[in-house]
Image (cartoon, rainbow, N blue to C red):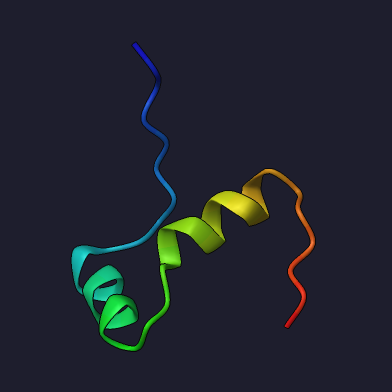
Length: 39
């Protein structure tokens, strides 16, 4: 079983991000993994 990490994103923040077309959880995971984001 994989471990669940607390990425500090509330349900409201996640849903607001999805409404704006942004997957906040995906961005947080990439930042935690040390991946560079090209903005």
